[in-house]
Image: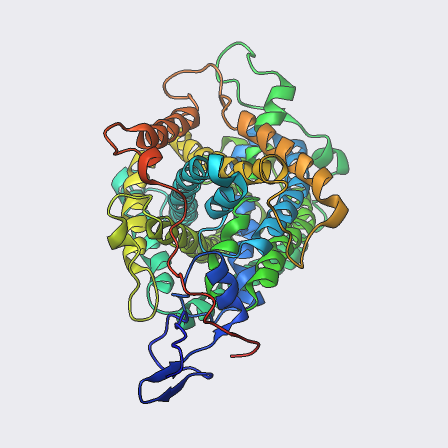
Length: 539
């Protein structure tokens, strides 16, 4: 009798390469399946995605076309146009370097768990489990915070449109109404992530279409309407405004204000690992995931800088934007430039586009939840790691949706809480990136075997730059964003980050065998018999 070759495809129906004759059965592994098996996992997802979907996952997560408007009003009083242009350009450039460094690691370890799996493999037997545990918690919390942060920004677009049309409506000022709109938006964002991969592929195409619809409108409609009334060069590149001092005294200096403005770009340029979380659903994952990460970051940076310049030169009344009272003062920018009806139309499309961005971020949060549940990190992991008949982790999706709606309750009616959530998301995700990057060049430098796609001799200088940039970002995003510091103006991001760190550390050191240090030895193998498989080039 021929030996049985285990099926790691995750599907129930026979596949090309499967042979059945009585009790004899042979199923061959593809290259992707074998690579995944070498990393310890059997194939559970359908592998139907390609470079476009992988690129789109990160590109639509970053989503600068709605990312610029989300914090546009905020950056206008946190440094003005000069800070907006300088910080955006700088953050985008450094983020591209980070994406290259992460892409090199992703090419070697293409798993849905992404960076926490990298941390384990690069940390080795001594440090791997602890680094993996901490990375898993930071990355998971970061992505779970990204979802409500993005959707709250989306809700502010819709509220602003309604405020333009119905300026006397009292319901628009109620916190429960904003919460309800955000919850509905997150339900829509969850839908493409719980049906099937086919729906997910359609969603990515729809999201990119909406994205470039707005892109064209920015590039054509805005300059046409601003014709003859453009800002001067000095009005854009030399116009600095320090509006973060709320008291009688100037406690925050202009350089400090400029540095705080880093959040404007940092809120958009992260989430590189969105591509990595689709690794187990992507053909030729080792190469495609790496390309998806750096290509999405580069295209976002290259396209966003001239778009931001157009937006700044088309600005009509800077003081009016600063003093406006919309849910998002981008609405005032639009009303000045294209009128009320045009502003409502753009804001409505932005709501759709930003909700699509939420869906992309939801996808990453869902996949991270599945991956760390597969390895037993979360309570009730057996429940959250389950896949439905379409090989979709629906229970993980329900958890992400529930937590996101709960987090949104804290944001109701508070601009400070909103910026705290955005800062927490950026801090947590970026710090989770720092752990495997640091391990790659320290304890894991001799263990790491680069894949075919690698940085060659550039890896060490780029790794150093990436690490220093993330540490700079981590520090800046913890600083107060308004002065004087009171309960109303406090940056609550350090408190949020502190809580996450304490919970993860306590979970690691709990006594009586309960803590992760006693039982978590790293990602759990879900496949053992690799030698019986055979690589098939094209299945």
